[in-house]
Image (cartoon, rainbow, N blue to C red; front, side, top):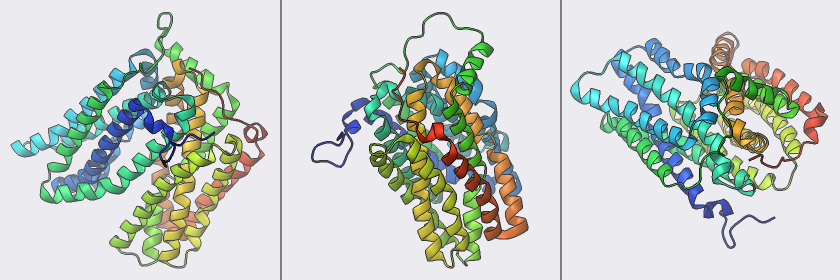
Length: 412
C-alpha cells in the first residue's frame, strides 16, 4: 500500500488538517521546552553558584515521573482529554511566564524555581499521556505509524535546534528563553482549540471507584503477554541506557574531545533521531512487528560495542550516527503497536502503567551510571551495561509469541 502523497515525499497523514495542527503545536512547544531546558540550569547556576544545588533542583522535575503517571492515567480516561491538554499547556505557560516576571521585579527565589520545574514536569506528564491516548482519534489506523514517526522527527528536530536557540536567547536576556517558552505553550493550546474530532469515545455508565479503574488498567496490561513482555523489555533496556549521555560525554573526553566536539557528537544523535523515524515509517510497511522488534532490540544492544572500541572521535561519531536511528526505530515501532492494541477507553490507564514501568527507574539508573563511570571509566562501563542488554535481546529473539506477533487492528 502506497501511503505517500503522489509526487511528494510527505506521507498522506500530512493531508490530515487536524494532525497538522496537533503536530505543529507540539513542535513549537517542543522548541520552547528545549530552549528553556538549556536556560534553566544556566539560570540556576547564576542564582545559586552551586552545581550541587542546581542538580538537586533539576532532579525535582523527575519526581512527577514516579508519583503522577498512575493517577493521571485514570483521570485521562475519565475526563475530556482535549481540555486536559489545553489546560496543561496554559498551566505550563503561566509557570514559565512567572520567571521573566520575577526577574523583572527582582523577586526570583529558589522556591519559585523549584515550584516551576515541578509544575512543568507534572503538566508534561498530563499532556504527554493525554496526547498519546488521543492520537488515534485524530488520525486513522493506516496513518498511525507515519503520525508517530513524524511526531518523533519533530521531537528530534526540537532537541537539535532548541538548545542553540535557548543559548542565544539567554545571552540576550536571562528572562527571554522562558518568555519564549511560555508563548510556545500558549500557541500549542491555541492549536488544540481548532482540532475538530473528540479526543475519546463517550464512556458508557458511571465512573467506578478510582482504585477499581486503576486496577482495570493494570489487569488489562498483565493479561496481554506480548504487551506485558514489551513493557518489561523497554524497562530493562532503558535502565541500562538512561545514563547514555553521561557515558558518551566521558567516552568522548577519553578520546580527547572538547566541549565543541561533544556538542557536535550530540548533534549527530539529533540527526539520527530524525533519520530513524523516517526509516521506521518505511520498515513498518514491509516487515512484521515481531521481526522489527527482534532486529531493533539486537541493534540497540550491539551498538554499544562500537562506543567502547572506538579508537578516535570520528569512529565514535559514526557509531552514534548509526546507533541513534536504531533506538528511534525501536521506539516508534513499540509506540505504534501499543496504541493499536489498547482500547480507547483504557489508553490513559494502560499507557500510564507502561510509563511508570519503563521510566520510573530513571533516577536510580543515572546514579548507577555515575558510580560505574567514577569507578571504572567509560569503556568498562559500556561493557558492563552491554551484557544485560544483550541478554534481553536474546530473550526477545526466543519469545515465539513475540516473533509471530503481527500489527493489531486499533480497538477504538
